[in-house]
Image 1: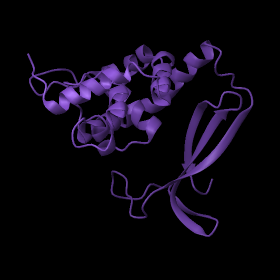
Image 2: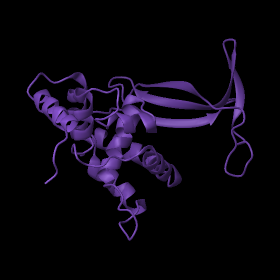
Image 3: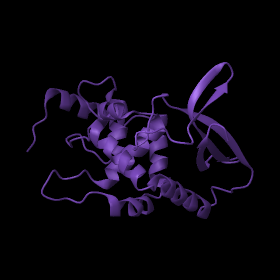
Image 4: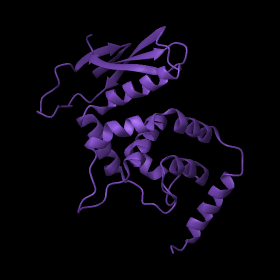
Length: 214
């Protein structure tokens, strides 16, 4: 049986107390997302591309990696910040912040947490197989079935995705669509993200990137 260290026992006690107090806005939000996101449909999209257990190190459960990916998007956490947010030791996050994140990601107090490289590799897997757009389509289809996304009265906003001017693609050359543009008195180099949002619900249903000149 695993023996609790003093730090672990203190964290576990805090987490137990957290369950008896009023829920924070973060806890309420994560509970709602746990119910709203079509997890089974998203897992089915990713599973064919996800590494299988073999002779090497056993991969983390796909459900955990997907939930961590969503947490990163919702709370704008970098890979190192996500790793830190899950760790009860040597972190600036309190127990009340760690417990709901771990619970949402299906990680117990004693489970090993994915490091920043593992989180990065998972994001690259989604990018490599073009899964982000398919996941968004699956979420929107589910919301439409529930009557939560009307797709009537769409607001579109163009946001600049800034990149260093030295950015190169996999062939070592600049992507042809990446250009410079001026916003106010400042120049930017990168792409534009055109984001379609349902006017009534505020839910994002379309994301398209184009060159700055478009």
